[in-house]
Length: 139
Image 1 (cartoon, rainbow, N blue to C red):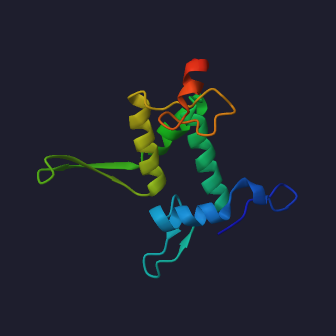
Image 2: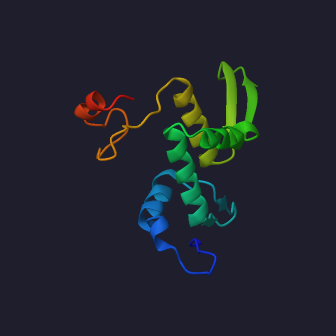
């Protein structure tokens, strides 16, 4: 796993909590890294992981550039196969990040992405935000 460095080569340890990254990988798998099929070893770049988080955060708040980035990410990442057995279309995706992007775009299209406008809200996503935040600050 590599750590992000600034232009002078100094470590930037506060960009991502490596323990949180490790817990994510143990629970869900490699986000965008490469897995060696023979050994099962993988390489997940911490800077890449952080970039993915940032893109998703900005897209969640409606950032147009981030939305375009997410759309571009999945534009060529999906492989669709007609499946009689499944009774429809089977979509395959080559990594977890592309799946996250597809699921985000589905939520976005249905209007299920937003954050509380209160910067003090301890849980700013819909469904976890305190109700009084949503009443005070129009979305």
